[in-house]
Image (cartoon, rainbow, N blue to C red; front, side):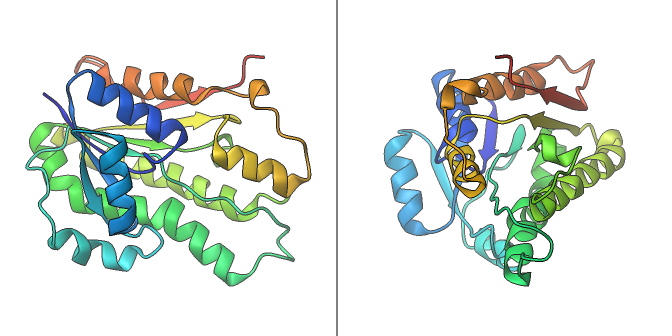
Length: 229
């Protein structure tokens, strides 16, 4: 039985991943920002375990995890959580920049650091659910795209550093996906949201599962997923 740690399991891609991994009998640890959210996730995913830590405050993650029982080995660490706030460079405040970078980049880096011992034991896999914005930045996407460009750099460096330890690293770059975040983006863009136009969260989840289930003789470094309709 494999053990997985997942951020962002409350909705969208992370929710589907949690459901599918539980259904096949794997053990999952779901990250929650506070105790109340942890209770909600435990009720929604019977059999799952929870870990409490606020991704918007990466400096406190080490302390938070020290107070909890962690898995002895981690077969995959799945970074799915993220935040987005659109706006021009002339409009975005330091608070927006700081929060976006904290949740989308610094917290994944810190969680990876904290779980590296368990990942090395298991010869595990780190998956960063990035974004098309991590490859190309458009107008009004500067903060989000900067965080995702940084996430690509984190993944590339980690891959080179941990290859000798048997840790695989994959970045997944989905296009627009039918999630609550996408609905928020449409509101910020002033556009009507039609979920049927975009990638289903399950399709991205299938991509992630394909990467972590790949036999040990191969490693998928980068996967780009685009809407097919």
